[in-house]
Image (cartoon, rainbow, N blue to C red; front, side, top):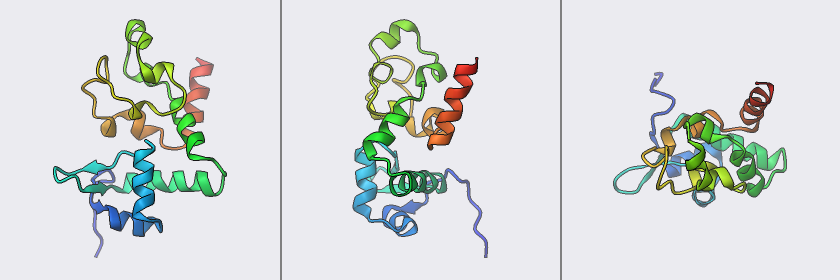
Length: 147
């Protein structure tokens, strides 16, 4: 029997996700605390993960294990994503934006109380979803530089 469901549908409880990834629940929670992932949370605060989330975490694991990147290094790579270009933030908004002015963590790690992201669900944002690995970030930067 083959189960078909959307790639981005959160269906795996945290324990199942950890088992699929061969890591501990504690590690998944640490990745969340560090701002590397944004799991879906039910009203009961139980975390659920999608196939896309599993792939993102596999990328993070590969970066740590194979590429020998630290969590801080991964966060810095994510911080390079020019989210303000996708969200059409004005220069005025950027002046006070922590994501624009910071360089140590991804935009989805900040509280966005004003501007284009104030009503944004970061889990559904293209910045979070489309740039989950170093290659996609590098390709984006190449595209920006060549413009």
